[in-house]
Length: 399
Ligand code: MG
Image 1 (cartoon, helix red, strand yellow):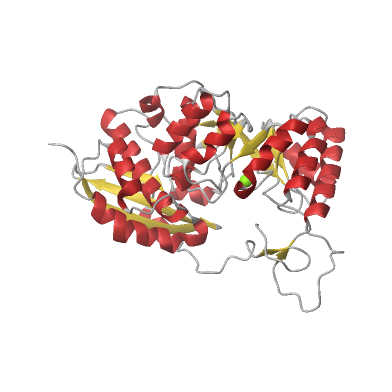
Image 2 (cartoon, helix red, strand yellow):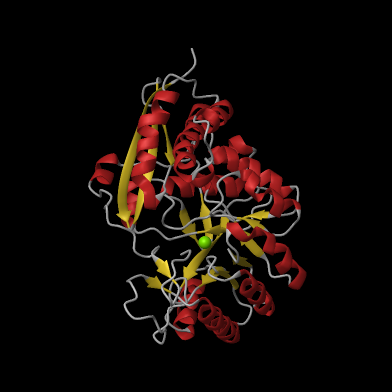
């Protein structure tokens, strides 16, 4: 008798800023369940409905061992496919099935993928600051804790300016000036390198804030700072511009947290226009497609750097980690440093020591959830402000 899916539960919780969506797949075997991340923090109600109303009736009663088949079928079952709401919902199920398979086998998920290539995954932390000096102070703090990779930003994603002139009666919003952003970041990187030399690997996230031609110039201007990578220099809408950047410089490029389907990386990977594939694994549909894209990238000498901020649940971070420990072409892992409450709510949340992230050797993803505690931190329905971004004249733009 195969073990089957008996029930699916969607858990919404907000222990530390981001609204998290976690899926619990309960099986016909008493006490056997799996967890998956389905976090789309800005549209969590939509993911919740997609799971409860559409996916649950579709998966209940199916054999838990057939992950590959279930993933493929779930992707096409709605006919219209490949959007962030449904992909996240499918990821919740997909990751939970990998977790279950590991528990049944008595092995951590990295073993199911092929076993470890490394004992710990090198992580990078986020240093911010209002000015370059504050950024340097924060980088130093991370170095003292053993981090060797640090992402440096200034004023969040940057470009906010006190001297910005807005038109009369400009509406409220998160304003930024793209060219001012570029100038300030160049100054900051100059200062950070002058203060810290080559004692640290630096990363920076442009967050698609530049016009394509300014992006080409920016990538070229930062080349001599020797970044480990420059992230999201272009928007997914402007992929053709990557070739222009490659013609001009060899700044390493990371791309892809906004992509939905593994095939969306294909043109960038095949033409070797980027250096790191950087997906938000739940946004893509879970561990199954992440495994596919890892191997595709590996064949072209491109490394992985999964998206790992606070709007990935600890279950999603655990999935990132198992892929990191296995992948022959692992690059670096983004890490958001959860507060103590999250460790209490999600026992088994990955631990970081001396700049490396470690997995427990528990079977499956090695992570659990205290549902009673999660219920005490319900998600707020507040309308997101930081994504209401505008240029100085008020034009709405990408955050
Ligand atoms: Mg990013």
